[in-house]
Structures are given as C-alpha cells and as structure tokens.
Length: 498
Image (cartoon, rainbow, N blue to C red; front, top):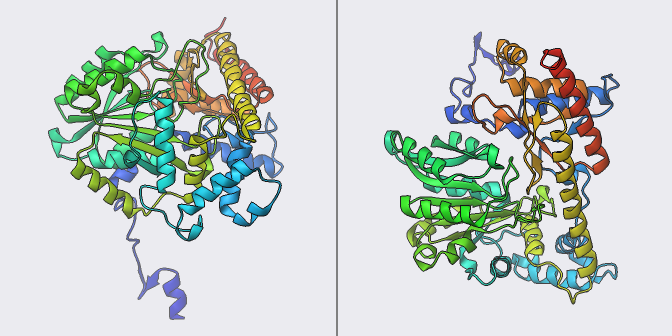
C-alpha cells in the first residue's frame, strides 16, 4: 500500500533525504567535545551491560571514577537538606512529627515565596526572591562582611548554566575582533565545549605542574599578548579550587589575576563550586570577590566579576537537583537588563534545585535542633574526602612512572603518567592520543574508568588522567591498587621497566 512505502521513506520510488545530516548539522555542535562523558565512558557503559548479561571479564565490576558524582559513588545525602526539600515537595508532611521544626519553618518560608505556595510553579527568572536574599546573606557572612546585593544574585540550573549564560553575553565580533576566552589548561571541558559551541576563540594559559599547578602571572601575560594578534580577549575564567588539578589558589595569586584583569579590561569568571572542598591544612579558600574588595574601591567598583557556586559538589553532592547560583557585580545596567532577558527565555531554574541551594546557604544554626546531626554529617563527608585526597596522592606517588601533585581541594587527582615511546607509537598508529590509549587499556583490563588528560588539555609531551576521590575508602584502595599493578605491567609490556 501507499502508506507502507511512505513509512519506509520512499514516495514515487524516490528515497527521501533526511533534512538533518552530518553535512547539514550545525558545525559548532560537531566541534564540541566533553571528555568526562566521552568515548571512554560510553565504552565503560557497554562493559557494564556485558557483565550484567553474564559476560566474563578479568574483573567483576566497572568502577566509574570519571565524574564528580558523589551520590552515585555511595556518598549519603545530607539529612536536613532532603527533609526541607521533601517538605517543600509534599507539604502534607508538615503535620508529621518525624520532621524537625527547623526544617519545617525553612520549607514554609520557601513555599511562601512560590506561586500558589507550590514547588510546581515557575519562579521569577532570576530565582525565588527569599532564596536570593539568603544567598546574599551567606556570601556576606562567608566573606566576613563584604557587602552582597541580592539583586546581583541569579539562581541557575547548576553552575554550568550560569557559566554558559555569561559566556553567551560576552561572545561577539568577527575575525580578529572575535571574543577570546582565556581558560586554564588543564581545564574542566565545559569551558572548551562552550567556546566551541559559541564559535569563540579559546585562549589557553597553562598552569605550572611543577609548582603544584599554580597560576603564574607571566604566563597570563604571555597568553594574552599572543592571543591579541588573532582575537580580542575579553574574559578570563578561573577555577578555584581547581578541576581537574585540585589546587587551591593563594590570596596573592588571586590579587595578581584581578590586577591583570583590571589593567587589561577583562571580564572575570570565577568558578568556585569546590569552595567547601579544601583539605590541606595550610590552604584556605579565598573568594575572588572578597579579595577584590580588599584591593580597594578602585578595583571593587570597576572589575566586572561573575562568581559561580553549585549544589552538586562540596559536602552536599546533590548533582541531580541541578541547583546553583551566580553573583554578578559591576555589570553595565543596560547589559544587566539583557542578562535578565536571556534568563527569562529559559523561564526559571528547577524549583527543587533552588530549595536545595537555599538549605546550603541557610543551614541549621548552633541553637537549632538539627544542628548537631547536620554538622556531624558535613564534617564526616569532608573529613573522609580529606583522608582520600591524601591516600590517593601517597599511593600514586609510590608507583614508578606516576607523579601526583597534592590534592589540596576539589575532588580529583590529576596524576602525570609516563607512557613509554613504544606505547606512544602504538597509540598514534591507532589514531588516538597516548593517554586515551592508556585509559582504554586500563578500563578493559581492570574495569576502572578514568578520563584521559587530553580531554582537559595538557602541555605537549605530557600525559595524565583524571580520577575522582569519591569512591568509599575500601573501594578507593582497591582502585588505586589496580591502577598501580596495571601501570607497572604496562611499563613492562612496553619495556620501559627492566
């Protein structure tokens, strides 16, 4: 019948071409790469399925150390956060004696800020007003009194959404006046992906691996001057604490970056989603905003700065809620109206994520019923992460041909791995990066899924991988032991160990 031929894509004997093909696809989409969910991870998923269906491998499970997804790795949710969100979602629970009063009044306050007192309503595009006010109060307290205006706070769908939005405002121009975006190498691949998608120019500045991944101001000037020949650098992105590199920036370093941005008229984007994840006792998190304030009014009232935070990391690990916010200061008022317009197109961030973010900035106080348990859970998560950071660094550094900087913060190790010349040749013959080859072999022989350093960027001739420190301490010891054994046999196979 005519219908069946139409359903097969033929009409009058002619094959109908698809409108959207790889040739007609937006070329910027094709250029996007996102390593933490890239080919290795897809392969890991296939192996997992194969094992579930009764297949055999030299290992019994796939350990995914590729992405900072705390709960998926067994971290327990913070009770108080879940209680407040549950009450917001299902207000009938307000009558239940099993929920504490301090959780109930927070939920009631959030619901009063929602249309129809329901988490199922849209909020204003920048977010629920009382939550924005709580965030401003939290920032003021964190920064020891540096003023924060709630109208500069915008809730976002995870920090990623805010970062993409600000970049969208900044990218313009053609050819040599096209926006250049300065990013650290190694970087979290959200940045390179966003830059590709927007067809902006990626301007790399390299972190100093020999100096614990420190940011060197001379390297910023080098990258800036070189980029000016072919684009217009307009923005500098900083990730502090670092992802994938785990370093925590010193106050002096932040001052130098802000002075550089002030001098060269750059917009500053400060990705501070790991601000609660600092493990090394002699390191401390300094927010870019606080340092800018301390540099004096000339700086504080002029440097354009967007800072980002999220519900996904820290001690909360609530990735699935997609909660986040950004604080944007010194933005031109007319541009600010354009930002609000852009935000209003996507209506609003998920309300449950906004509620989760509110609990993070407004946790139980010392005189409240839930304080003790909350504090215990928070300390336990951060304490375990600090132990795992140290353990990971120690075990990796004991392996010949692996060198790992201290994991001062965040939730990843980014060890440098020696890959013998013969293995490099074999990888090239297969048309892949040497560390991709290494990570694929690691996955196929041990079931461990890590991300090759080439997905984050690295100095030519160096090789790395990124692994999370999120698995339980028992599982982490197994994982690190397997990495050690694999690495030694890999070196032997390619005759780099006698």
